[in-house]
Length: 352
Image (cartoon, rainbow, N blue to C red; front, side):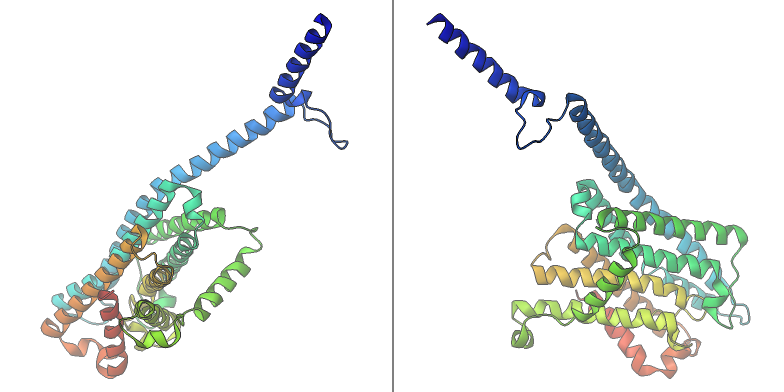
């Protein structure tokens, strides 16, 4: 009797040890039980990886606001130097002030985009891995590379009207835009699956898929303005229009390339970088409307940023019509249809 009790007691101890220590678990199907050293090493690697991931996210929470402020300063300084004087003409001071003000119109959307990315970084990589934030990071990277190129190689962007930035401004602004592009590209790569070699293919497929998906689902219900499916029509059209203006800023000849911002040869192609970011933001808003997520904080911020850009653009245009000499804007006076189309684009942004 005593022997049976002792055997049962020792069996219970052995069972508890097997549950607590992996080394005491029986070997199943020829598998070797992991040693305590290997288990400690695996746990340590997981802890170190977690700390590294938290460190990257903490860096992004600080980097996005800093990049937003630095890009604002760099773009403002470049706009003031490029538009403050003309290399061949003597322009009225009022025209110069209005043109500089027009150049600063896209900044609210830059702030909204960086604020949305910062909020996502505060949640963690699980949020940054969402398609919305990958799109925003990629668009921020592309627009920053565009701005860096426009600053570093200004003559290639200005045509016959050469803009020459001061050496310190050129170096500083280019560095700021490249740093912003690096932050956004790093965040996009860390939050996207696949290797670095697969990145170009992923970008190309994503861009092609985004273009092909611009036609919103809904069929005949899209014709009913009161239907829920019709909500996506406005942001889809805005995305397409902003994409067209982005291509115009990049490849159209002057003076068509000066639309929609009417900044002249000196800064219009460079401003296309902001149109690219606006196009990506409008696509994110359109995607949120389709998924029924338009009331989420990120899309509220992007929508407000697009509205601010649209309202400010229309106000600047009205000021130019009322106060400035219309002959100073050859694209607007010689291409009335395109001018109306540009106004319609920003009227749509203001009404989002």
